[in-house]
Image (tube, rainbow, N blue to C red; front, side):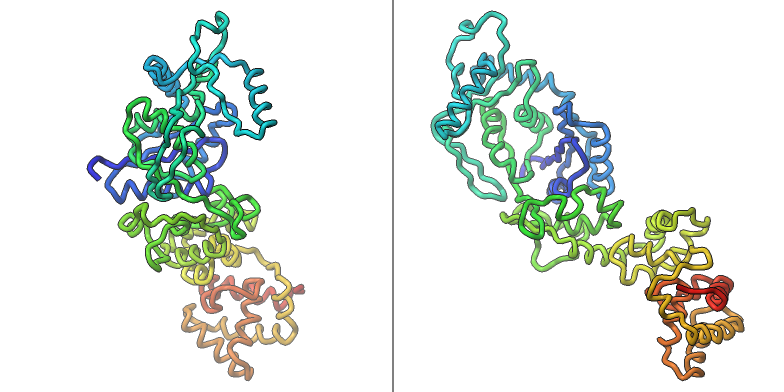
Length: 473
C-alpha cells in the first residue's frame, strides 16, 4: 500500500459500547497497526434526541479498557454540520444535487401508491429536473443527490468480494433536510473524506449504504475508500445477537462477568477471523498477523463458554498483584464490608491457588471470601453435613497437633496433618475435607495447606475452636 492506511471506528452514542462494535473497533485498530497506519475515532452524534453524554463516556470507557484508543482526538460529527452543508451546496451548484419541494403529504401518498402496487418504496424524482421557480415562494425544500439512473455500481469489497447493484435501484436520497441539517449518509462520507480514511471496515449491515454513499463520493470527485464489510455476530443458536444470548455491552463483561480485557480481545479477534489453528493470540501477535484477508464471509457465533475458558487461561497467566487489585473490591461487595488495609497483599499471596481453576474474577472473589470472613463462619449445606460429631473429634485432634507447630509453614502443616490422618487410620482426604469445611465454610477452596498458611496460625486455630464449640448447620 503506497499511502498511509487510515481506519476509523464511528459509533453512535445512544448506549453502551456494543460487543459487536468492540470487534469492529478491534479489526480497524489491528489493521491500522499491522500496516503502520492510523486508527481514528468518530462519534456519530447527529441524532440529538438519542445521543447522550453518558453514552459517549461509556464508549470511551469501554475502548480504553480494551486498549483501543484513537491515535488522534475523537471527531464529533454534529460539530461538523456546517462542513456537511457546505458539501451539499457544492453538489447543488455543480448539478449533482437538486432542491426537492415535495411535501410530506405528497411523499406519504407516493409511498401508499407504491405499497398498493407492491413496488419498492423509493422517491420518484419528481423534482429532479424541474425548475425551482415552479415551487411556491418560500416553500421549504430538501437537497437531494442526483443519483445515476443508468448502468451499475460496483464495489470490490475486501471481505464480500465483488458486489454489483443496478443504479436503477438507487433513489435520490436526501443530503440536507428542510431545516438545513445534514443526513447521516452525507455526514459519514464527508467525515471519512476529510479524516483521510482509506479503509472503511464495518458491519455488513452497512453494505447497502455503501452504494448510496458512492454517489456522493463520485459526485465530489473524491477517491473511493477500500470497503470491508464484515459479517455480524450471531448468538449460539444462529440468530442475531441479542440480550437473550448474554450481555451486549462491553462494560458488562468487565463489571458483571469478571472478564479480563485481553481475554475479550482474543475472543473477539477469533470471531470471524482466524490464522490456522491458533486460538491463544496475544495483541502483539495479532498485530503481526492481522489482515482483512483472514476475515470470513459467514456470521460467527458467540459462545460464552469459550470466552470463559479463554478468560481462565488469561487469569492463570496474569500478574497476581494485578488480579488482587481487581478482585479486592469484588470480595468486599460480596461480603458487604470494607476489607482490611493489607487485603491486596493477602490476596496476592493467595492468588496462585485462587486462580488455578477459576474462569472469571467473580469466581476468584468467591474463592477468596474465606480469607476475610468474621467468625463464626456461615456454613453451606455441604460443609455443614461434613461437620458431624466424629469430624469434630477429628478436628479437635488436628487443632491440638497444629497448635504445637513452631513454624507456620506449608511443609510443617502438611507433616502434622498427615500424622493426624495416619494416627486415625484415615486417608489424608478424610481429614482435609472436614478441615476445609471448618476453615472456609465451604467444601471447595484452594489447597488445604495453602488455606491454613494464608489464614495464619491464630485465625486457623480460632476457627477450629469455634467449630468445636458451636452448632453448625
